[in-house]
Length: 74
Figure 1 (cartoon, rainbow, N blue to C red):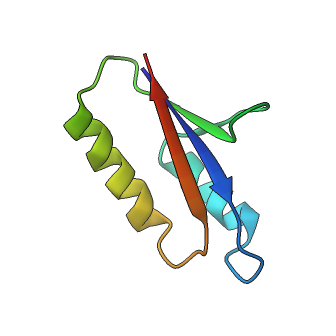
Figure 2: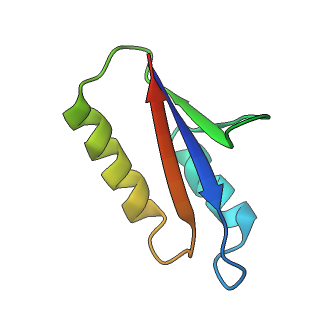
């Protein structure tokens, strides 16, 4: 499974480079195209695991001003 992440930055928020580094530390890889980042689970996960991961990303990006959108597919 893969979870794709789109990031929308606020002009008064954290720098893009800081958000980029935080996401890399969480295991995301940058992509070119429709989505900004991808996280490869390397296995099938259940909904609870995915929600817990989204919670973790939200905590990591708290107070950065970033808006995030997730899309997961098998």
